[in-house]
Image (cartoon, rainbow, N blue to C red; front, side):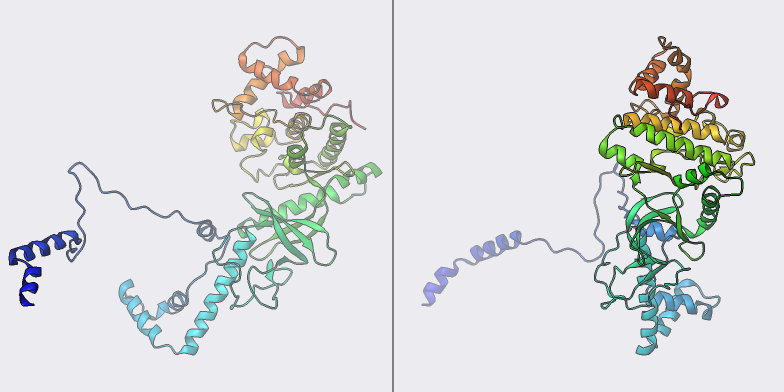
Length: 454
Protein backbone atom coordinates (compact mmCIF):
# COMPACT_ATOMS: atom_id res chain seq x y z
CA UNK A 1 0.00 0.00 0.00
CA UNK A 2 2.79 2.37 0.95
CA UNK A 3 4.66 1.46 -2.23
CA UNK A 4 1.61 2.31 -4.37
CA UNK A 5 1.28 5.73 -2.68
CA UNK A 6 4.99 6.41 -3.21
CA UNK A 7 4.75 5.44 -6.87
CA UNK A 8 1.72 7.75 -7.36
CA UNK A 9 3.54 10.65 -5.71
CA UNK A 10 6.63 10.11 -7.87
CA UNK A 11 10.03 11.66 -7.37
CA UNK A 12 10.23 14.81 -5.17
CA UNK A 13 11.58 16.81 -8.13
CA UNK A 14 8.61 15.80 -10.26
CA UNK A 15 6.20 16.97 -7.54
CA UNK A 16 7.98 20.31 -7.30
CA UNK A 17 7.76 20.71 -11.08
CA UNK A 18 4.01 20.01 -11.03
CA UNK A 19 3.54 22.65 -8.29
CA UNK A 20 5.51 25.22 -10.28
CA UNK A 21 3.40 24.64 -13.39
CA UNK A 22 0.20 25.18 -11.37
CA UNK A 23 1.58 28.43 -9.95
CA UNK A 24 2.35 29.69 -13.46
CA UNK A 25 -1.33 29.22 -14.42
CA UNK A 26 -2.54 31.44 -11.55
CA UNK A 27 -2.61 35.27 -12.00
CA UNK A 28 0.18 37.14 -10.30
CA UNK A 29 -0.74 38.81 -7.04
CA UNK A 30 -1.17 42.62 -7.36
CA UNK A 31 1.27 44.52 -5.14
CA UNK A 32 -0.13 46.80 -2.50
CA UNK A 33 -0.39 50.53 -3.17
CA UNK A 34 -1.42 52.54 -6.23
CA UNK A 35 -1.15 50.85 -9.56
CA UNK A 36 1.59 52.12 -11.83
CA UNK A 37 0.85 52.74 -15.48
CA UNK A 38 3.81 52.21 -17.78
CA UNK A 39 3.88 54.58 -20.73
CA UNK A 40 6.36 55.20 -23.48
CA UNK A 41 8.62 58.26 -23.03
CA UNK A 42 6.77 60.29 -25.68
CA UNK A 43 3.24 59.52 -24.52
CA UNK A 44 1.17 61.88 -22.37
CA UNK A 45 -1.24 61.06 -19.63
CA UNK A 46 -4.78 60.78 -21.00
CA UNK A 47 -7.15 63.33 -19.53
CA UNK A 48 -9.95 61.75 -17.52
CA UNK A 49 -13.32 61.81 -19.22
CA UNK A 50 -15.61 64.42 -17.72
CA UNK A 51 -19.32 63.81 -17.64
CA UNK A 52 -21.38 66.27 -19.65
CA UNK A 53 -23.72 68.36 -17.51
CA UNK A 54 -27.28 67.14 -17.81
CA UNK A 55 -30.18 69.27 -18.98
CA UNK A 56 -31.34 69.44 -15.38
CA UNK A 57 -27.95 70.79 -14.26
CA UNK A 58 -28.06 73.46 -16.95
CA UNK A 59 -31.60 74.42 -15.92
CA UNK A 60 -30.59 74.70 -12.25
CA UNK A 61 -27.56 76.82 -13.17
CA UNK A 62 -29.73 79.11 -15.30
CA UNK A 63 -32.25 79.48 -12.49
CA UNK A 64 -35.13 77.92 -14.43
CA UNK A 65 -35.37 74.99 -12.02
CA UNK A 66 -34.85 75.33 -8.24
CA UNK A 67 -32.05 73.55 -6.40
CA UNK A 68 -32.67 70.32 -4.54
CA UNK A 69 -30.34 69.54 -1.61
CA UNK A 70 -29.79 66.57 0.66
CA UNK A 71 -30.73 66.82 4.35
CA UNK A 72 -27.13 67.25 5.50
CA UNK A 73 -26.52 69.98 2.89
CA UNK A 74 -29.57 71.85 4.17
CA UNK A 75 -28.33 71.46 7.74
CA UNK A 76 -24.90 72.83 6.82
CA UNK A 77 -26.38 75.74 4.89
CA UNK A 78 -28.56 76.73 7.83
CA UNK A 79 -25.89 76.33 10.54
CA UNK A 80 -22.64 77.30 8.85
CA UNK A 81 -22.70 80.66 10.61
CA UNK A 82 -22.12 78.75 13.87
CA UNK A 83 -18.50 78.08 12.87
CA UNK A 84 -17.18 81.54 11.93
CA UNK A 85 -13.55 81.81 10.88
CA UNK A 86 -13.07 78.07 10.45
CA UNK A 87 -11.54 76.59 7.33
CA UNK A 88 -13.86 74.50 5.23
CA UNK A 89 -12.43 71.10 6.26
CA UNK A 90 -12.55 72.00 9.97
CA UNK A 91 -16.00 73.50 9.63
CA UNK A 92 -17.33 70.43 7.84
CA UNK A 93 -15.93 68.16 10.56
CA UNK A 94 -17.76 70.20 13.18
CA UNK A 95 -20.96 70.12 11.10
CA UNK A 96 -20.68 66.33 10.76
CA UNK A 97 -20.21 66.00 14.52
CA UNK A 98 -23.25 68.19 15.18
CA UNK A 99 -25.27 66.20 12.65
CA UNK A 100 -24.39 62.91 14.37
CA UNK A 101 -25.80 64.24 17.66
CA UNK A 102 -29.23 65.05 16.17
CA UNK A 103 -32.17 62.93 17.25
CA UNK A 104 -34.27 60.94 14.80
CA UNK A 105 -37.08 63.49 14.99
CA UNK A 106 -34.72 66.36 14.14
CA UNK A 107 -33.26 64.46 11.22
CA UNK A 108 -36.76 63.70 9.98
CA UNK A 109 -37.43 67.45 9.86
CA UNK A 110 -34.42 68.04 7.62
CA UNK A 111 -35.41 65.03 5.51
CA UNK A 112 -38.88 66.49 4.99
CA UNK A 113 -37.38 69.78 3.84
CA UNK A 114 -35.11 67.94 1.44
CA UNK A 115 -38.00 65.91 0.04
CA UNK A 116 -39.92 69.12 -0.48
CA UNK A 117 -37.08 70.65 -2.50
CA UNK A 118 -36.77 67.53 -4.65
CA UNK A 119 -40.53 67.46 -5.24
CA UNK A 120 -40.51 71.12 -6.30
CA UNK A 121 -37.53 70.51 -8.57
CA UNK A 122 -39.23 67.56 -10.23
CA UNK A 123 -42.38 69.55 -10.85
CA UNK A 124 -40.35 72.41 -12.37
CA UNK A 125 -38.34 69.96 -14.49
CA UNK A 126 -41.53 68.36 -15.75
CA UNK A 127 -42.84 71.83 -16.56
CA UNK A 128 -39.82 72.59 -18.76
CA UNK A 129 -39.94 69.17 -20.42
CA UNK A 130 -36.79 67.86 -18.71
CA UNK A 131 -36.69 64.15 -18.04
CA UNK A 132 -35.74 63.33 -14.45
CA UNK A 133 -34.68 59.82 -13.49
CA UNK A 134 -37.15 58.26 -11.10
CA UNK A 135 -39.86 60.82 -11.86
CA UNK A 136 -42.63 58.32 -12.33
CA UNK A 137 -43.90 56.69 -9.20
CA UNK A 138 -41.68 58.68 -6.85
CA UNK A 139 -43.68 59.52 -3.77
CA UNK A 140 -44.03 63.17 -2.93
CA UNK A 141 -43.21 63.26 0.78
CA UNK A 142 -42.54 66.97 0.85
CA UNK A 143 -45.00 69.82 0.68
CA UNK A 144 -46.86 70.41 -2.58
CA UNK A 145 -45.95 73.45 -4.59
CA UNK A 146 -48.02 76.50 -3.71
CA UNK A 147 -51.01 76.30 -6.02
CA UNK A 148 -52.58 79.74 -5.87
CA UNK A 149 -53.69 80.97 -9.26
CA UNK A 150 -51.40 83.97 -8.98
CA UNK A 151 -48.25 82.05 -8.07
CA UNK A 152 -47.54 79.78 -11.04
CA UNK A 153 -47.71 76.00 -11.20
CA UNK A 154 -49.40 73.87 -8.57
CA UNK A 155 -49.40 70.17 -7.74
CA UNK A 156 -52.89 68.78 -7.30
CA UNK A 157 -52.80 66.18 -4.54
CA UNK A 158 -54.04 62.84 -5.86
CA UNK A 159 -54.97 59.75 -3.92
CA UNK A 160 -51.50 58.28 -4.30
CA UNK A 161 -49.65 61.61 -4.11
CA UNK A 162 -47.16 60.50 -6.72
CA UNK A 163 -45.21 62.26 -9.41
CA UNK A 164 -45.59 63.22 -12.14
CA UNK A 165 -48.29 65.36 -10.64
CA UNK A 166 -50.82 67.40 -12.56
CA UNK A 167 -49.39 70.85 -13.12
CA UNK A 168 -51.78 73.76 -13.31
CA UNK A 169 -51.50 77.45 -14.06
CA UNK A 170 -54.55 78.98 -12.51
CA UNK A 171 -57.50 77.23 -14.16
CA UNK A 172 -55.39 75.50 -16.83
CA UNK A 173 -53.97 71.97 -16.70
CA UNK A 174 -50.75 71.36 -18.61
CA UNK A 175 -50.99 68.78 -21.43
CA UNK A 176 -47.64 69.01 -23.17
CA UNK A 177 -44.99 71.18 -24.77
CA UNK A 178 -45.45 73.17 -27.99
CA UNK A 179 -42.05 74.83 -28.27
CA UNK A 180 -39.47 76.97 -26.53
CA UNK A 181 -37.50 80.15 -26.98
CA UNK A 182 -35.12 82.51 -25.23
CA UNK A 183 -37.97 83.80 -23.02
CA UNK A 184 -39.07 80.38 -21.75
CA UNK A 185 -41.48 77.74 -23.03
CA UNK A 186 -44.84 77.46 -24.82
CA UNK A 187 -47.06 74.65 -23.55
CA UNK A 188 -50.47 73.30 -24.41
CA UNK A 189 -53.05 73.28 -21.63
CA UNK A 190 -56.73 72.65 -21.05
CA UNK A 191 -59.11 74.79 -19.06
CA UNK A 192 -60.47 72.85 -16.08
CA UNK A 193 -63.74 74.83 -16.12
CA UNK A 194 -64.54 75.00 -19.86
CA UNK A 195 -62.41 72.19 -21.32
CA UNK A 196 -61.10 74.35 -24.17
CA UNK A 197 -57.50 74.15 -25.36
CA UNK A 198 -55.19 77.09 -24.77
CA UNK A 199 -51.52 77.92 -25.30
CA UNK A 200 -49.59 79.07 -22.24
CA UNK A 201 -46.48 81.13 -22.81
CA UNK A 202 -44.44 80.49 -19.64
CA UNK A 203 -41.63 82.96 -18.98
CA UNK A 204 -38.55 82.58 -16.85
CA UNK A 205 -38.65 84.76 -13.77
CA UNK A 206 -36.01 87.13 -15.13
CA UNK A 207 -38.19 87.69 -18.23
CA UNK A 208 -41.28 88.83 -16.32
CA UNK A 209 -40.97 92.26 -17.93
CA UNK A 210 -41.29 90.61 -21.35
CA UNK A 211 -44.70 89.29 -20.32
CA UNK A 212 -45.94 92.71 -19.23
CA UNK A 213 -44.69 94.24 -22.46
CA UNK A 214 -46.31 91.61 -24.69
CA UNK A 215 -49.55 91.87 -22.74
CA UNK A 216 -49.69 95.61 -23.45
CA UNK A 217 -49.20 94.95 -27.17
CA UNK A 218 -52.03 92.39 -27.27
CA UNK A 219 -54.33 94.78 -25.46
CA UNK A 220 -53.42 97.60 -27.83
CA UNK A 221 -54.35 95.62 -30.95
CA UNK A 222 -57.39 93.84 -29.48
CA UNK A 223 -59.22 96.58 -27.55
CA UNK A 224 -61.35 98.90 -29.68
CA UNK A 225 -61.02 102.67 -29.29
CA UNK A 226 -63.53 105.46 -29.95
CA UNK A 227 -62.29 106.17 -33.47
CA UNK A 228 -62.50 102.55 -34.66
CA UNK A 229 -64.87 101.56 -37.44
CA UNK A 230 -66.81 98.33 -37.81
CA UNK A 231 -64.04 97.08 -40.09
CA UNK A 232 -61.47 97.80 -37.37
CA UNK A 233 -63.46 95.69 -34.94
CA UNK A 234 -63.53 92.86 -37.45
CA UNK A 235 -59.79 93.14 -38.05
CA UNK A 236 -59.15 92.86 -34.32
CA UNK A 237 -60.38 89.25 -34.60
CA UNK A 238 -57.16 88.39 -36.45
CA UNK A 239 -55.40 88.36 -33.08
CA UNK A 240 -55.87 85.62 -30.50
CA UNK A 241 -57.75 86.32 -27.27
CA UNK A 242 -56.02 86.51 -23.89
CA UNK A 243 -57.58 83.96 -21.54
CA UNK A 244 -55.47 84.67 -18.45
CA UNK A 245 -52.09 85.77 -17.21
CA UNK A 246 -49.89 85.98 -14.12
CA UNK A 247 -46.97 88.41 -13.90
CA UNK A 248 -45.68 87.29 -10.48
CA UNK A 249 -44.03 84.22 -9.00
CA UNK A 250 -41.23 82.05 -10.35
CA UNK A 251 -43.17 81.19 -13.53
CA UNK A 252 -44.97 84.20 -15.04
CA UNK A 253 -47.34 83.07 -17.77
CA UNK A 254 -49.63 84.37 -20.48
CA UNK A 255 -52.62 82.30 -21.66
CA UNK A 256 -53.73 82.61 -25.29
CA UNK A 257 -56.62 80.95 -27.05
CA UNK A 258 -55.56 78.22 -29.50
CA UNK A 259 -57.16 78.34 -32.93
CA UNK A 260 -55.95 75.81 -35.44
CA UNK A 261 -52.23 75.09 -35.90
CA UNK A 262 -49.30 77.16 -36.98
CA UNK A 263 -49.12 77.92 -40.68
CA UNK A 264 -45.61 76.44 -40.73
CA UNK A 265 -46.92 73.10 -39.47
CA UNK A 266 -49.80 73.19 -41.94
CA UNK A 267 -47.42 73.72 -44.88
CA UNK A 268 -45.07 71.02 -43.60
CA UNK A 269 -47.88 68.47 -43.43
CA UNK A 270 -50.00 69.43 -46.46
CA UNK A 271 -47.56 71.16 -48.80
CA UNK A 272 -48.00 74.51 -50.55
CA UNK A 273 -51.38 76.19 -50.96
CA UNK A 274 -51.93 76.28 -54.71
CA UNK A 275 -55.62 75.47 -55.05
CA UNK A 276 -58.91 76.53 -53.50
CA UNK A 277 -58.06 80.18 -52.89
CA UNK A 278 -55.85 79.40 -49.89
CA UNK A 279 -53.09 81.94 -50.68
CA UNK A 280 -55.67 84.65 -51.31
CA UNK A 281 -57.37 83.99 -47.97
CA UNK A 282 -54.04 84.11 -46.16
CA UNK A 283 -52.93 87.31 -47.86
CA UNK A 284 -56.21 89.19 -47.41
CA UNK A 285 -56.29 88.48 -43.69
CA UNK A 286 -52.57 89.07 -43.22
CA UNK A 287 -52.77 92.43 -45.00
CA UNK A 288 -55.83 93.45 -42.97
CA UNK A 289 -54.19 92.43 -39.68
CA UNK A 290 -50.99 94.35 -40.48
CA UNK A 291 -52.99 97.42 -41.50
CA UNK A 292 -54.81 97.18 -38.16
CA UNK A 293 -51.51 97.04 -36.26
CA UNK A 294 -49.84 99.80 -38.25
CA UNK A 295 -52.86 102.08 -37.73
CA UNK A 296 -52.09 101.83 -34.01
CA UNK A 297 -48.38 102.53 -34.65
CA UNK A 298 -47.37 98.97 -33.72
CA UNK A 299 -45.01 96.86 -35.83
CA UNK A 300 -44.86 93.09 -35.29
CA UNK A 301 -41.16 92.73 -36.29
CA UNK A 302 -41.14 88.92 -36.11
CA UNK A 303 -43.64 87.93 -38.76
CA UNK A 304 -43.21 84.34 -40.01
CA UNK A 305 -45.31 81.26 -40.69
CA UNK A 306 -44.48 79.97 -37.21
CA UNK A 307 -46.20 83.02 -35.70
CA UNK A 308 -49.37 82.67 -37.75
CA UNK A 309 -52.18 80.31 -36.74
CA UNK A 310 -54.23 78.85 -39.57
CA UNK A 311 -57.62 77.28 -38.95
CA UNK A 312 -58.18 75.15 -42.05
CA UNK A 313 -61.82 74.47 -41.14
CA UNK A 314 -63.04 78.09 -41.35
CA UNK A 315 -59.97 79.41 -43.27
CA UNK A 316 -59.19 81.98 -40.60
CA UNK A 317 -55.77 83.46 -39.84
CA UNK A 318 -54.51 84.72 -36.47
CA UNK A 319 -51.30 86.55 -35.62
CA UNK A 320 -49.51 85.51 -32.43
CA UNK A 321 -46.29 86.25 -30.54
CA UNK A 322 -46.05 90.00 -30.10
CA UNK A 323 -42.92 89.63 -27.96
CA UNK A 324 -40.77 91.64 -30.41
CA UNK A 325 -43.44 94.18 -31.34
CA UNK A 326 -42.49 97.85 -31.02
CA UNK A 327 -44.42 101.09 -31.08
CA UNK A 328 -43.11 103.41 -33.79
CA UNK A 329 -41.73 105.98 -34.38
CA UNK A 330 -40.60 106.11 -30.70
CA UNK A 331 -38.98 102.66 -30.85
CA UNK A 332 -37.82 101.34 -27.47
CA UNK A 333 -35.12 99.02 -28.93
CA UNK A 334 -35.99 96.46 -26.27
CA UNK A 335 -34.31 93.63 -28.21
CA UNK A 336 -30.90 93.46 -29.83
CA UNK A 337 -32.08 91.66 -32.98
CA UNK A 338 -35.41 91.67 -34.76
CA UNK A 339 -36.96 89.23 -37.23
CA UNK A 340 -35.99 85.61 -37.76
CA UNK A 341 -33.10 85.56 -40.31
CA UNK A 342 -35.00 84.07 -43.33
CA UNK A 343 -37.63 86.83 -42.94
CA UNK A 344 -35.25 89.71 -42.08
CA UNK A 345 -35.04 92.64 -44.53
CA UNK A 346 -31.65 93.84 -45.83
CA UNK A 347 -31.60 97.07 -43.78
CA UNK A 348 -31.49 95.04 -40.53
CA UNK A 349 -28.39 93.09 -41.62
CA UNK A 350 -24.95 94.31 -40.64
CA UNK A 351 -26.06 97.53 -38.93
CA UNK A 352 -25.61 98.26 -35.24
CA UNK A 353 -28.62 97.85 -32.99
CA UNK A 354 -28.85 101.62 -32.45
CA UNK A 355 -29.09 102.20 -36.20
CA UNK A 356 -32.09 99.86 -36.42
CA UNK A 357 -34.30 102.42 -34.71
CA UNK A 358 -35.09 104.35 -37.89
CA UNK A 359 -35.87 101.17 -39.82
CA UNK A 360 -38.18 99.41 -37.37
CA UNK A 361 -41.68 99.98 -38.68
CA UNK A 362 -44.21 98.82 -41.31
CA UNK A 363 -41.58 98.21 -44.09
CA UNK A 364 -40.05 95.41 -41.99
CA UNK A 365 -43.44 93.68 -41.64
CA UNK A 366 -44.18 94.11 -45.36
CA UNK A 367 -40.89 92.43 -46.32
CA UNK A 368 -41.64 89.55 -43.94
CA UNK A 369 -45.16 89.27 -45.40
CA UNK A 370 -43.66 88.82 -48.87
CA UNK A 371 -41.43 86.03 -47.55
CA UNK A 372 -44.48 84.45 -45.91
CA UNK A 373 -46.50 84.51 -49.15
CA UNK A 374 -43.64 82.89 -51.07
CA UNK A 375 -43.52 80.16 -48.44
CA UNK A 376 -47.30 79.72 -48.57
CA UNK A 377 -47.26 79.14 -52.35
CA UNK A 378 -44.09 77.00 -52.53
CA UNK A 379 -43.66 75.52 -49.01
CA UNK A 380 -40.03 76.74 -49.20
CA UNK A 381 -38.10 79.70 -47.79
CA UNK A 382 -37.51 82.59 -50.16
CA UNK A 383 -34.11 83.45 -48.66
CA UNK A 384 -32.43 80.33 -47.39
CA UNK A 385 -29.00 78.86 -48.25
CA UNK A 386 -28.97 75.97 -50.68
CA UNK A 387 -25.50 74.76 -49.65
CA UNK A 388 -22.97 75.10 -46.86
CA UNK A 389 -21.13 77.79 -48.81
CA UNK A 390 -24.15 80.09 -48.72
CA UNK A 391 -25.66 82.00 -45.84
CA UNK A 392 -28.94 83.79 -45.36
CA UNK A 393 -27.12 87.10 -45.72
CA UNK A 394 -25.59 86.05 -49.05
CA UNK A 395 -29.08 85.10 -50.26
CA UNK A 396 -30.41 88.52 -49.23
CA UNK A 397 -27.57 90.25 -51.08
CA UNK A 398 -28.18 88.14 -54.19
CA UNK A 399 -31.88 89.03 -54.07
CA UNK A 400 -31.12 92.75 -53.82
CA UNK A 401 -28.50 92.55 -56.61
CA UNK A 402 -30.85 90.80 -58.99
CA UNK A 403 -34.03 92.65 -58.05
CA UNK A 404 -33.98 95.00 -61.05
CA UNK A 405 -33.42 92.13 -63.46
CA UNK A 406 -36.31 90.17 -61.95
CA UNK A 407 -38.69 93.14 -62.23
CA UNK A 408 -37.80 93.63 -65.93
CA UNK A 409 -37.81 89.85 -66.60
CA UNK A 410 -34.34 90.14 -68.12
CA UNK A 411 -31.30 87.94 -67.90
CA UNK A 412 -29.54 88.37 -64.53
CA UNK A 413 -26.00 89.71 -64.40
CA UNK A 414 -24.48 87.17 -62.04
CA UNK A 415 -24.85 83.57 -60.93
CA UNK A 416 -26.16 84.65 -57.51
CA UNK A 417 -28.80 86.87 -59.11
CA UNK A 418 -29.79 84.01 -61.38
CA UNK A 419 -30.29 81.77 -58.34
CA UNK A 420 -32.58 84.39 -56.82
CA UNK A 421 -34.59 84.59 -60.05
CA UNK A 422 -34.89 80.80 -60.19
CA UNK A 423 -36.31 80.84 -56.66
CA UNK A 424 -38.84 83.50 -57.59
CA UNK A 425 -40.04 81.57 -60.65
CA UNK A 426 -41.08 78.68 -58.40
CA UNK A 427 -43.99 80.76 -57.14
CA UNK A 428 -47.17 81.10 -59.27
CA UNK A 429 -47.00 84.13 -61.63
CA UNK A 430 -49.68 86.05 -59.77
CA UNK A 431 -47.79 85.74 -56.51
CA UNK A 432 -44.42 86.57 -58.03
CA UNK A 433 -45.64 90.18 -58.38
CA UNK A 434 -46.81 90.18 -54.76
CA UNK A 435 -43.42 88.96 -53.54
CA UNK A 436 -41.57 91.52 -55.67
CA UNK A 437 -43.70 94.41 -54.42
CA UNK A 438 -43.38 93.35 -50.77
CA UNK A 439 -39.67 92.51 -50.89
CA UNK A 440 -38.27 95.64 -52.54
CA UNK A 441 -34.67 96.35 -51.43
CA UNK A 442 -35.59 99.94 -50.53
CA UNK A 443 -37.88 100.20 -47.47
CA UNK A 444 -39.72 103.24 -48.86
CA UNK A 445 -40.69 101.34 -52.01
CA UNK A 446 -42.39 98.41 -50.27
CA UNK A 447 -46.16 98.14 -50.13
CA UNK A 448 -48.87 95.53 -49.81
CA UNK A 449 -50.38 95.21 -53.29
CA UNK A 450 -54.11 95.61 -53.72
CA UNK A 451 -54.72 92.89 -56.26
CA UNK A 452 -56.12 90.52 -53.62
CA UNK A 453 -57.14 93.09 -51.03
CA UNK A 454 -60.86 93.19 -50.06
